[in-house]
Length: 424
Image 1: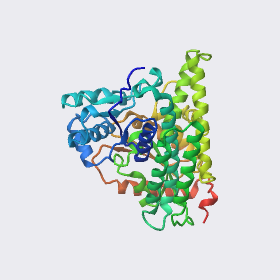
Image 2: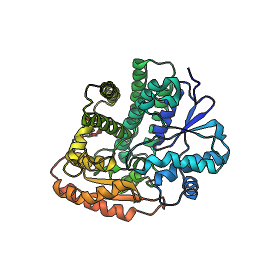
Image 3: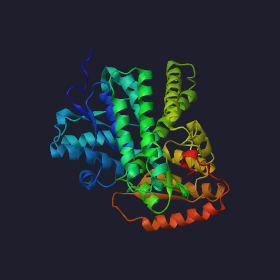
Image 4: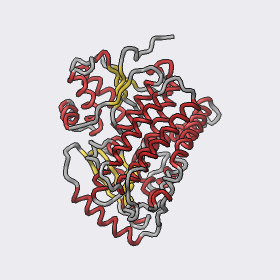
């Protein structure tokens, strides 16, 4: 057996979400690989990333590269001891070039010894050693669980009566979840049970935060490019800004993208008539196992998400987008954003914000389509926000958007349901 390429190195994860990076690092530690989340992005991150990019790249490239360079320049870790986790993708999005570009920049700066890992099922996850399959499954569980905790955070925080209490409870919940995900030696059932128990404890902590749910707020869907919508620094903490202007948020989560890539894989196999191949069978088994994990973790939240259910199958979202962006001919987040906006309107949402890096083609294409979509779905307010790291004050834009949301809310035809836990 070949030597583990990560031996003697620490794997660092970009903080697309701080909770997601923490639990993914914990998943790696569960199989004996040293791993840590990147420190939260800040102004130094942006300055460092901007210094070594031309200005034409996506904001997420500046953020991920800036976070990594910040660590290296500080001397906190030697290049030969660092591994940087950088997923990869095919297709037209510039994301597929992040890794090669960052390698080039690091080499020019004298950090060529940094190892980039991009595990895929095509090579049996060889980049992470002999525990690849188990590790990826554990990481998936951590991501789903952290998504659910964040969803509960956004349900409770707008209604808290003691400012900051929900964030404190959430942070403690993420610590409990990370400990469960990172516990070594668990079999599959034991790991699911341990994570589910941690979620129940975290739920209790969040529900213990004093809150007043007597006056439900307008509910705003948050869709868009995955990194920019989830990384708080990249989007100027847009969720909290919406809360400050009187709203509540329902954000598309990380696992939505995983479900989409699963569906796209099956779609591609079907297109080439590979219905009865080993690859097709494996993809369907993976789908089944991931769905089972998700159901197990949802059970920890009882009826907290009644009326806030995600689509049972991501292909439902893809089909809702079909009249505007056919899934067979369009790839990526533009289709998911359009389909999710339509789905959310059916759940009683009051408005949608589409969050994107400046110049992102996903946002540009979706923005061109939204006027037609809005006319079809009862005039739902939909607004695209672009972010470039300038920190522009968007309070005025948000106030105008929330005025439109209020008008729509008064006349909308679809009324939301509220879980029992939030009717007090």
